[in-house]
Image (cartoon, rainbow, N blue to C red; front, side, top):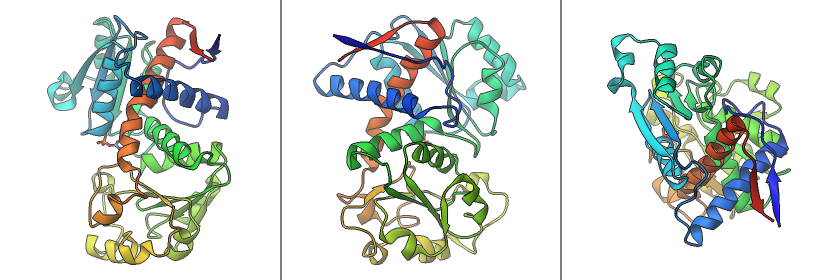
Amino acid sequence: MSRVLTWEKQNLISIEPLSLAEIQTIFSLARYYKEGTESGQLKFDALEGRTVINLFLEPSTRTRLAFEIACKRLSADCISVSGGASSLSKGESLKDTAQNIVALGADVIIMRHSSSGSADYLSKTVDTPIINAGDGSHAHPTQALLDTFTLTERLGDVNNKKVTILGDILFSRVARSNIHCLLKLGAKVTLAGPNTLVPKEFEAMGVTVSHNLKDALEDADAIMLLRIQHERQTSTHFPSIGEYTTSFGLNERRAHWIKPNAVIMHPGPINRGVEIDSKLADSSNSVILEQVKNGVFVRMAILHLCHAAHTKTEISLPK
Ligand code: CP
């Protein structure tokens, strides 16, 4: 017996166009790959003979490696290109770069770029599946999907669970994508941090904005910490890093406010001792490395689905 997965989107640019059913489809396929891998199957043939280009025009450790590993597990050939090593640094446009990558035979393009909107632009430029690995402060959809997948594993169901996102919301693509994904899954989202980085205007998205850290933390089922995105800020939004940590860092004193089994999350990279104390990052409440591990399975699912939509190939899973 098998069941066929329904999927029609060849691009993953942001969370907004995904339905709840589509998010559940990604989770089902990610779970299939996770269970298969954990029972000893290290290779799957879904992308055998295909070429995936990992175009990373901003630094990355987790996302880039997770995509590379996901491609290899799916039997694809994966080639990673970084900005400084490409002819973009000689003035070639993104459109010409993409068209050349397609001419070279790419079956899927994964891109990280510092400009918001670049992944959407690329998806309208070439007819090859585009997966957004983070564009400016706009979106990081695969991060949100792996975060919510991890949360679902830990909490069972996030419907009606309170998730507090603490830190630099204003410049965070991770926060934006997570807000959309968590709300679709029925979670109650609270945003906390300095009012310069967490303006009340975010409430229009359907979340609660709290500038009282104790209120934001004390009944949360999960707390997602974010680092300060210095690379996107053109002016400072609080007096100093030390003062940010004093007012908003998750330290051992504030940890007494949280529920004993509250899940602690962070997309990484962590700035230990700034937004989170080392002891808490390494505590049994923390799922930070579980998030990283799940990043491979969620990205295997996304690569498989987007490629299948493009080639109009059916995906069936054992029931
Ligand atoms: N979370 C995340 O995007 O990490 P990297 O920048 O290391 O890919």
